Image (cartoon, rainbow, N blue to C red; front, side, top):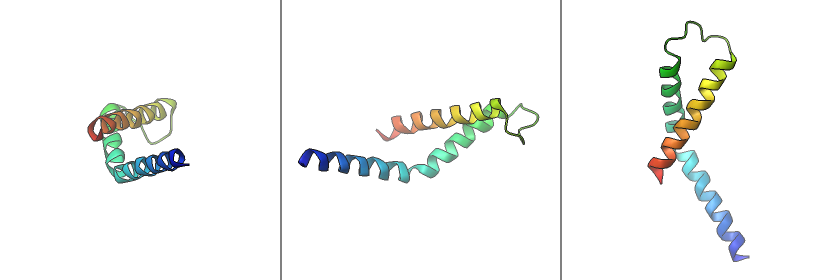
Length: 70
C-alpha cells in the first residue's frame, strides 16, 4: 500500500509542476510556432502544415521546459 501511495504522490507532484508551468509552456510554444510560420502568407485556416508546426512547437517547448525544470 505504501508503494501505491508514493506513486500517487509522485503523480500529484508532476501534475502540480505541469500546472505551474502551463502558461510558460503556452508562451514558449507560441513563440516557436510564430518564428516557424513567420514567412507563411496565410495562417488563418487550419492546414496540415499549420497543425504540424503547432504540434512540433508544443513538443519542443515541453522538451525545453523539461530540461530546465529538472
